[in-house]
Image 1: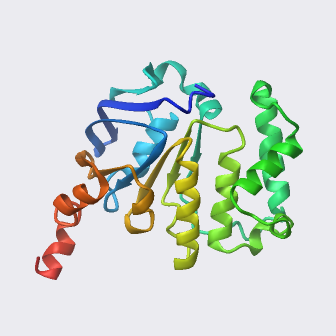
Image 2: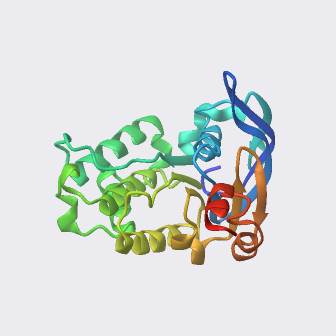
Length: 252
């Protein structure tokens, strides 16, 4: 799948996920294609994080199938980190970490190169420089310790780490959640830029910061409620379908 960024697709076919008696996903079916940015919106407990973890192979469906570029995920999920990157929801930088930004990305790049040497056409150092520059971090910021970063800068570092192997697919779970308003604007712009050449899938509670860069919105509440053009889909279905409690409280 590497170097196939001009044709990227993910297809869910009637995917169910259960954790004991708890239903996390209830017959999810959809297909998205990239490059482009996909927003998955829904309330807490809607299954957004579970859906991303299914794509990575961290969670296996109880039933149903997932295909990436037409290939059954169950057949090659051990190779996923070669083709896609996943940024889980992280509220803040690790306060006890002695690592600098450079050291953190260099370590990740070294590990990745050992696992997938053919993915690297340049040195680890060149790869680190490329990733840090691509996410807009200054050379002064490269030397900062992780524990000293703001939420917005730390998210940029995590995105840089996700780009090391130049994956076709980038998954981000609530990347704007712990970022201040100004930081959200610049981070949204960065994700929009990355989505010009990759399939970027982002989970969120609030579609607004990324709306200008979004190709498709998926409204999820354990199953797909609606999907399509961002503004039209949100106009027709949100917040009434996604947030019935909010609608009731506000008298709509």
